[in-house]
Length: 254
Image (tube, rainbow, N blue to C red):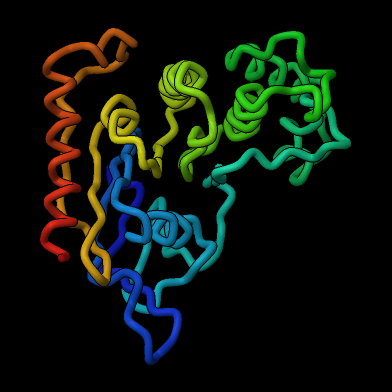
């Protein structure tokens, strides 16, 4: 079942300027994990914002769950590049925010939040405040908050880019477990090619000026995936292919 459908998308901020995106066609199936890669300025975040209803295309249409998107909808959760936590609220209170905006929070909701926090390695940390947390812990709170409302669609814009390598690797593994547990269809922006290959069912390469979908890559590894996969020669070959495709695109633009 197609859960995200972008048809002939274009975005032009000013009438006399070159479009940022043009002729973008993209479909994402229910339960898929799709990463979007490309060089800086290729329109990755812009496309994600349009899928999330934060920007409207100048041309074309975007359908989520069989409805055309003109604004954000409840079934979609958007995770930004940097953790956005309220300093005066505890970890638990920050995680409960999406539910609090919709209804009165119950004890059942609090118990659920604690379970999600435990799933991201923050068991018994719910009483701490953001200033008491490391960068990795803040990212874990953001993950827990993203999943507390059990979104059908999860849009993530380089959420692990500021983390050290070991913390990033652990969060990648936890993200895979959570997307499976909550059956979330995920679109993930990253500059890290290895990250894209490890997390994804498919990788989409954006490029050209204006930007469009240049190439799609099916990642041939079954899930669940272990950390040891990254040392497998067949995985290294996939990463090499992704890298060469980006580099070749750069060469063509010279």
